[in-house]
Structures are given as structure tokens and as C-alpha cells.
Image 1 (cartoon, helix red, strand yellow):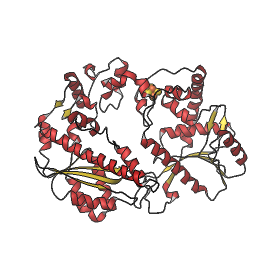
Image 2 (image 1 turned 30 degrees about the vertical axis):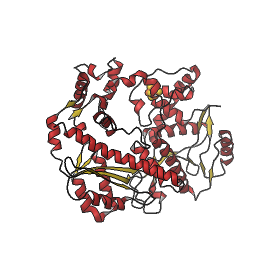
Image 3 (image 1 turned 180 degrees about the horizontal axis):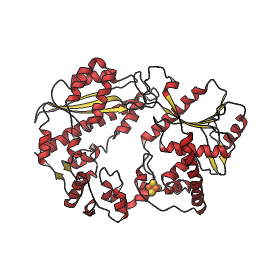
Image 4 (image 1 turned 45 degrees about the vertical axis):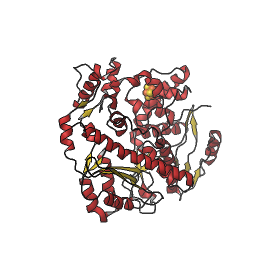
Length: 488
Ligand code: SF4
């Protein structure tokens, strides 16, 4: 039997068509698997296991069965004989749920999330569960979401009472349950009719959880430049698209645009870059030799790995620096990569202070990221506070040239990320052939590299891939900076 689970309901709330794709098994070519999503799923499982330890003084039962029929049987057997059931299985008229924690002593339903806050999807998730459990005759007085305390500082021993925060959402979900009853009628109609709901593309296609069916739904719309409209928080592009305006150049003059959006439109009309030479010259005159191009890679983890770190803190493990002592001089490369499972922050601080020396501009791309990591390094290496603060003062952000509209090209597609800018400004340089070609993959692969379960050969391959990736980031910055400097 096929059941409707909370996952299906959340997908339905994101987009009825997305629910139908999954439910009706009409699965068009789904997009690529995001390595970060896989990694976060595993972390979620680890956090869920940790939360069970909070109930170790109670009589508990863990329904370990993946097989649903057996899980129903086990749950029935455990009911009434224990205080707490983990991942019990409940069914009501085609709906199914496996609640993380059912605490019968306090009539509490608890859902564990590996995030640091309660999100809208969590409310839908737990409303679905409460509705179903009550239909099954389970008494629920309190509903809580257990999530991670962002402020928690790990001191080497995990204190679960401090690591978790339990937010009472009993009140919040009461009106969601009324909404749910209505939604279930629509869901049942979709199932009965077996027809895909209307295709209504919008910001929900790009929501945090995304949609793997964009290729199918968006079809030729992916080529419509109207979707490149930058910083369109109100979703103006979707309204315009529905009105039949597909290209930026066709936006009617009565539509209010930001200065950047106007430049985007102009760039598309003229099919070329719009360059503000004066502004670029002014910006570049701030840069002084020797120039250091700097980039970090960092990883995050829900459960802190090293003392004096917090959940999801960015831990930098790698840095690449390209140094240019003067115009026309040879570029020199310096790199740092931590290769074992030790806290890399102190060694990285020393490397940065030594390699970036005491004078000259430090160019970063999206500098707030590099500055943020340096401020965090100060916390882990307070003895180097003065030196690290001095580095922060020397940082100059190359992205600002693009972000502030000094150089706008239609092929940037509304983005100013280095991955979009590089192939336009320096077409010979590309991330395409690298084993690691984005920061997310770099962090996931780094954790694989330092794992004791990874073979020596695999570790070596990841190490080389990481070196190549981070080094290209700073070489790309140097190359973009050189090209931009040639404009003035
Ligand atoms: S791409 Fe958008 S419209 Fe299509 S199924 Fe996904 S969310 Fe729905």
C-alpha cells in the first residue's frame, strides 16, 4: 500500500504539481543530487540519534524496523508498556507517520530537527503528525520541535541539555490542522484523478528545498532572461513572465526597476557589457602593491567537532594566496590545507600572518566571507588578534566591481558570483574540468578526506582536487582583476 507521509504533504504545500510528480510516479529527469543535501540528511540522522539520549532515564522503545508492516506491529506491542517510543509507526486512512519521539508520560509529541531554528516546513510536518496521531487515538497535550541551540559552545564533551532547545509549537499548529483537513481533500482529488496539476512556475520552484523537476516544468523558460532580474525580492519577474514578457530588454518602461536592474536591461538591449570606467578607476586606485589574492574553504557541522566551536560554525581548513609584488612581476602561490582531523584554526592563523605579510592589499571575492572567517579565527587564536585584525583592515572586495554595477554583462545572468563572472571575463579559465568545482563539494570532500574510513589513495585524490580548486579561485581573482585593470 502507498501511504501519504509528512514529506508528501510538505511537497504539496510547496507545489501541488511537485507532490503529484512524486505521488503519481511521473518522474521526469530530476536534477543533479546536491552533495550538501546528502550530507545534511546524514547529519540530521546523527542529531536525531543524539536526542534519544535525553530520555535514557525513561523506559523507551526504539522501533528500528524500516519495514512498515513490521513497524506497525512493533509499535502496537510497545504501546502501553513503555514511557517513550522512538519512531513508532501510525496509520490512518492512507496517511502514515513515524514520529521521532512520543513521550507518553507527558503526552508529548517531539520532532527533532538539525536546524538552529523552527522553520515553516517543521510546523507543517508536526501538524500533519499530530492530526494523524489523534485520529489514531493517541492523546497529545504538547507538541515540541527539538532543534539545535546556535549559541551552544562545545567544550569537548557534548552537553545535550544545552545543545538542544525544545520549542513548544502546540498553539501555532492548531490552525494549521484546520488547513490540513482541507488540503487532504485536494490531495485525494489529485490521487483519484491521476492528473498533474497546472504548471505554475514561481519563487516556490527556487525555495530552500528546491524542486528536482525544474527541467521539465520550466522547459524553455530557463532561457528567458527575465528570470535573471537581480535582487527581485517581490517576485516581479514571475508576474512579468505571466504577462508574456520573457526577456529583460522587453520590460516596459512603466515597470519600476532598481539601478542595477536598469543596467541589466541596457546590457541586454546592446548585447554587451555596460562599463563605468570612471567608477572602476576610482575603486582600483584603492589597491596597493604587493597584492595578495586570498580565498578560504571552510566546512560546517551540526554537531561541533572541536572545542570552542558552535553548531554550524564555519571552520576554515584551507587557504590559497596568490601574491603579485608589482605590475608585470611574477605571480607567487602559497597554500594551506589541513590534512588530518585536527582543529586547523591555529595553524591557519599562523600561515595567514606569515604569507600575507604586513603591507599591501588583500583582495577577496565576496570579502564579507573572508572577513567573517578571520574574525572567527581571532576567537580561536586570541594571541594573534592584533595581526589578524590588521589583515581584515587590508581586505578589498573584487566582487564590488560587479555588485555595484560598475561592470554589468548580460552573460552574468544577473549574478556576480565568481563562477558566473570568470567565464565571461576570462573565457579560457574554467572550473568545469576540476574534480571539485564548488565550495559545497569542497567542504563535503574535506570531511571525507580527514575521515579514518577513507583509503590513503582516496585521501590523496581529494587533497589534490582541493588544492586545484582553491588555487583556481585565487588565480581566477588575479585574472579578473588584471582584465578589469586593463579597462582604465
Ligand atoms: S518546478 Fe515549480 S511548478 Fe514545477 S513541480 Fe517544481 S515547484 Fe512545481
